Image 1 (cartoon, helix red, strand yellow):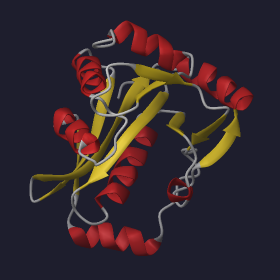
Image 2 (cartoon, helix red, strand yellow):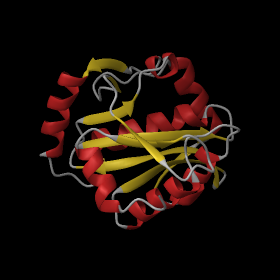
Image 3 (tube, rainbow, N blue to C red):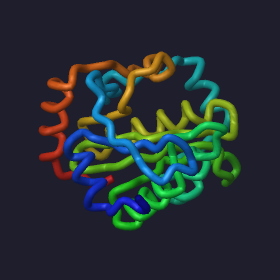
Image 4 (tube, rainbow, N blue to C red):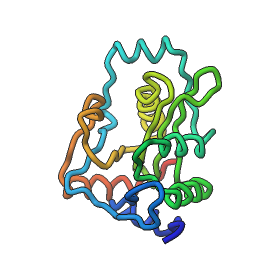
Length: 192
């Protein structure tokens, strides 16, 4: 299949559809639209006091779009991943046209973790996250929440509910409820 044109990726996200590959070496991608969608309500994000103390004491600092390639490489550097080389290139191209973004976590000016996703209107579609230092993914979620809230976003889509994300306020909603929230979010004009 090769690199997915940015226009096709953006249209898919506008419809609530997202791509995933079977493996890092896969040529083809599969397109998904979850029947039950995982979102983190921006007014429902939570982080324990213990985790907040750990993040503060670790000395993590946030970054936005400083190292998109580093974040996507970190996310793909797993034994098993859905981020194929072609998807990686597709998201990098989407970043270069201003629609894919990264939230980074730095420790002593070194990338320690982060997440990336796609922003359209008031919706942020989080794709993947990684950490190379303890609690850096929690810090990435905290920094992402702050950034989305401060910039007027109304939808934080994480695709699927997991118990791990549930600890941070993730809930599962029906596709009908999701479609309404998405439709409203796409009407909002905000800048990542």
